[in-house]
Length: 273
Length: 286
Image: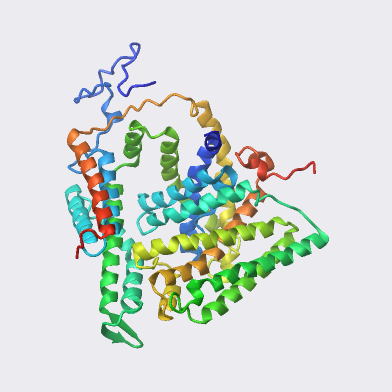
């Protein structure tokens, strides 16, 4: 019980509505003004998870989607049922926060080069189990067309290069862990979203990503596997970008401010060491 | 600070200048009570939320035509009685992108369907696909409209005040109320930031690579600006006894009745039974 109430200090209670508003407004702005094929509607959720813990993160995610559906001016649409996915994302972010994934870890020289290479390798390794997933390989289950493999491999290489460059330029090992956390969150989000999308909305979401669903269906996938294939494409990219945005935001906040949150001690660098 | 109908402090007394025709137990002036009027609006917010939640569950949980169609009819009837059918148009328009997507992708690309209706180029529309597409469309529209009717007929503060009276913690009430209140302010701040960054040369029209570079100049100021308020708000809340152990007294008691309570139980239990039986395949509906 103490573990739970520690996650909901007054400061966190104040942060949660701000995070919800950030999720909704930023998600809406990125999708309508920058017109990018990603969602970016979980920055607030991940921020609360990392600063306060899993339950606070999950609550932020769930309430964000429910309020987005209900909100008097920008509401409507079909975001509501995805509250389950948002809750899982917040839960995971809380676990990353407790594991101190987002703590800055300055390094130099060899260590940095090794980490940059490791990040690249991990990005590729994470993609291999997705490609070997029976949903993709078994022709009786998924039956994805061959370009899916090529595209996934190309994206994996791009992500690997970008992450390695981020680690090298910022001279910070944390980039490695932030990327891993983002990719894992994205994969879990895709697996949670696919059944929701298939059961509630006939497998589509009404966004630009539906083109991908159509292509996968044309290739012979069934409803749920087409949604899953689309999710495994979009979500890891989206959550990795979100993860890095949250990391950049956190490293821009003063340690004095961060330390006041329940998980602040896992974010502030130990100066004495 | 317990009990919902506290007595009026003797040093203040009821204000005789305020019209108080209802003569409510707490002796509150009418501008505090603000009881909503109208056939559907005047129902207790909790009743309306149970109606919306049951509608959503039935629309998604009862497969085939029956679930979505009955919810759509009920929602339309409520919208007519409450007089919000005009404002509902905006919510119908909001579902157009997903409806188009559902219709096209399922009608033409439904996996394993062979009963071809007609062909457009290399794509064939199948009977199975069209059926699935229409059912999914009805589900989406029925769900979106049932939430929209709830949103249009219920003021947020009424709903939250009622929930708090029923025992929801003040923390949840604050989180939801504050988030809903903050969205318009945050949206106008986002617009300001976009304009300011455009004036400084942010490219919101160029290639995908350029637009991705726009994420941090957009998200950064918004998040930092919002987070700078956390300290002030925390201090303000603490100074007003937010973390005090006692319950807050709710002054606005919205009318409720035995009939509404019975209706809520009936709807709630009925929905669970119907959805459960439908998922278990107990009674096949068209």
